[in-house]
Image (cartoon, rainbow, N blue to C red; front, side):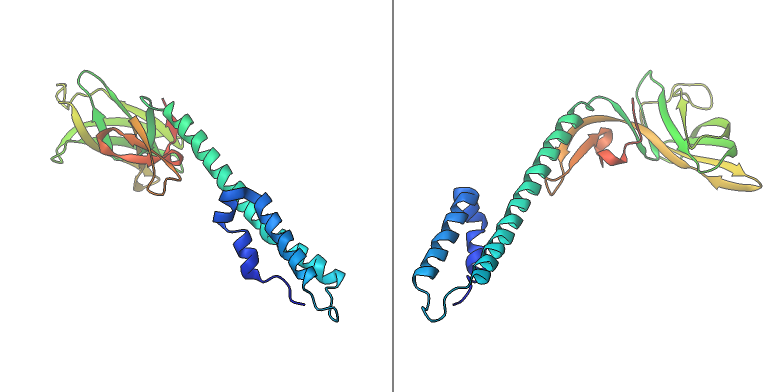
Amino acid sequence: MQAISSDILSLINSPQTQESGSDDLGQEDFLELMVTQLQNQDPFETLQSGEFIGQLAEFGTVSGIGELNNSVSNLASSLLSSQTLGATNLIGKNALVPSESLNLKEGESVKGAIGTSSPANNVNVSIFDAAGNLVQSVPLGVVNQELQDFEWDGTDASGNQAPEGEYFFSVVGSQGEESVSLDTYAYKQIESISLGESSSSVRLNIENGGELNISEILKIE
């Protein structure tokens, strides 16, 4: 007497079988095969109770794996839907993300932030235009926080309003006698959301054509 082959069990639990009748159809097929085995077994080599229980356990394992796969897939879809719905509430808000650029709009100031793992002195923010010319310096002095905001009023070193557009900035300070560069962050407006290439993650589309994961956001305003 031979046990039901793994190929048959795989067929019972195949995606096509599950889609056409879920787990009920798989169980019916299994029972039909078992009855056929019992009806055609060798009378001198009958199926022992231990073998029968073993085949039931094997079927239960394969069926259980299929149910687990379906449950995980359904959970992933549910989480993605929830994440997508939550992300739509972020459209129009400003997200603080790692960046070296600032987007200046006419008549408005612009905010960024700096990060440091330990206190720094003589901290200064240097702002450059697209051609690399220094436009303005924003002195911050001592920075004790791991993440500290700064604001640029949009004027150049002569006090004139700088044209709107994208600017770049760097931050330097000193720790002891050593000069150090600090981490740079900027507030970017979230314009829309989209699914990632694998359709399993939500991407946030920000101004100037950039995009990021929700996990990259440090703060929302």
